[in-house]
Amino acid sequence: MSEAAHSSVQRREIAVDRVSHRFPSGLLAVEEMSFKVQPGEFVVIVGPSGCGKTTILNIIAGLIPKQAGTVTVGEAGPKAGRHDVAYMFAQDALLPWRRVMDNVLFGVEVHGTARSERDVREQATGLLAMVGLQGFEDAYPRQLSHGMRQRVALARTFLMPSPVLLMDEPFGALDAHTKLMLEQGLLRLWESSKRTVLFITHDLAESILLADRILVCTARPGRIKSEIPIDLPRPRSIGALQNDARYHEYYRRIWGELGTEMEV
Image 1 (cartoon, helix red, strand yellow):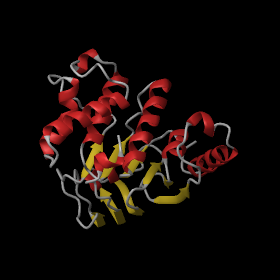
Image 2 (cartoon, rainbow, N blue to C red; image 1 turned 180 degrees about the vertical axis):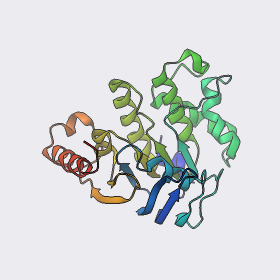
Image 3 (tube, rainbow, N blue to C red; image 1 turned 135 degrees about the horizontal axis):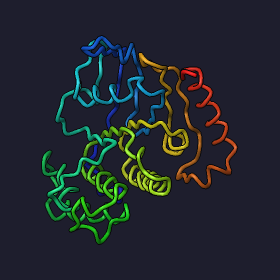
Image 4 (cartoon, helix red, strand yellow; image 1 turned 45 degrees about the horizontal axis):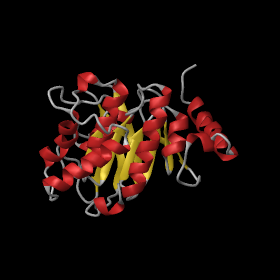
């Protein structure tokens, strides 16, 4: 998809400043967490299980309230249902009674768009082809593998003109081959529009492949322990990175940061 196809997308910054959140059970999930994601930047958060990664995404999206600190996307605070933030979950969340094309169009139908219906469908068709689903437009979710359903969800997310994308381990449950294919598809889509992306993963190889910067979280309660800029040329492929000594050095560094936070 060309840059022109998303010329209306206005890039926005995410700013999280000293945010804390305690659940009703008394569990302190996030404590004084602070970071920024610059407009058009791809930032990945890694950290031990239970350190509040998903909680902070839910706060940014306006799905749960923060209890302390400030969060802004652009100039506005969190608000559920806002049009400038798209959220892709670990599960595809497709509507089983809608065909593939109709599922891809669903987000745009809900939020609305200034684009003509013809333009939107043409872009949806192009996105489906880009993620390898050309010819499956009329299939139902039950007829697709899990990996194919995640591809539909990825196309749906990128069809929305939202300048900010939140992605919570969207490829975590996929087999290795499908995961690599979708990672490369995501990079192609992002490079065509350079939206602001905040991405969560437990996969260190995936984080290095995708990120401009990696934020490493402490164990619960989650705080940002370190920030690692990834100075590797784009476009990237995991095959080429395997032959780059810098990739392996980044991997060792991130693993070392995480190792001190994990229970043995």
